[in-house]
Length: 399
Image 1 (cartoon, rainbow, N blue to C red):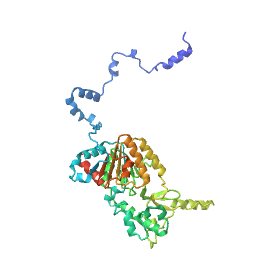
Image 2 (image 1 turned 180 degrees about the horizontal axis):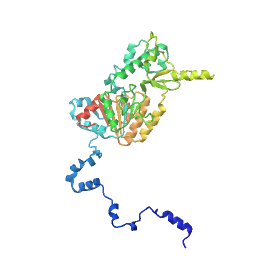
Image 3 (image 1 turned 180 degrees about the vertical axis):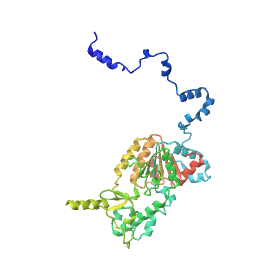
Image 4 (image 1 turned 60 degrees about the vertical axis):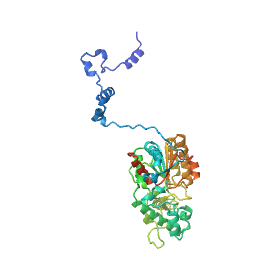
């Protein structure tokens, strides 16, 4: 006799009474339960047998929406390390002997899937924004135009900027002019080109040393994107924001709050933070000890200043290193900043270990110490970065 426990366990394994058992089916019901193959599967199987029907099938509404995948071609040519490619001369038609190097560069920009871009002031010169270290850069022009400034670099040094009222006013005037210039300037052809690579999900991250924010004027690289995983990392801050040096509260930049002239009747030399003022007033009403009101400064990271977002940038950089980038694109920067140099060295080491590509794009050749830092470049692109999209168009590469 079957035990009650075993009978109960057996009932748990038994299908519910609503299920139709196979032996209860009638012959006429088999037609209704037969599974009809999908039309697409039949069509695809017929294409294998009859290749002549392939074009007709691909034009059908069913398959027209299928994604068309392009296979990555084999790299046929890789130049010797530190080969110099004259970009400007090539697009002008006077360096056709470098056609293989041009093909290599277009291959890297077309088929790399995890590009890390490190760019500097050189990418914004075409937009009318001056760089820093060239003959017409800010360090040179500021020294000659400001009587209080011994070196143009002083206006980007935290210790000098707030050493006196006159230096602070000169700094405020410079930031106000750069803010106005950045607001009226438009992204260059290079910015549009990099944005198109971002839209194709080829760019892992853009590390920009620029404070103008031109790279964030596209929807793909907007400054309003997720702060935890931005497409663009502004290493030196942004001229479009100001922040409190005490509570770190960030605001949209308002140049009218800063005194930009000795005779100006409006603005403060170093404005007070509205958030801190409000907290202080509340603490005063409650009878609590006052903690002081912070001061505002443009959200531009200066020399000898603690980087307020240094830890966040380090986390993103480590994340990008773990993602195994397959290309490093260094554009419009001389890599004079020690922190940026160290970051580029780590990316170059990772890319080289994965047999990726290191591309240098600048109007000047990389000095020997930079070549050593990068463990040499796969290609040194000598010329204006604005000609990169021109090259891609000439090589019939559709972006």
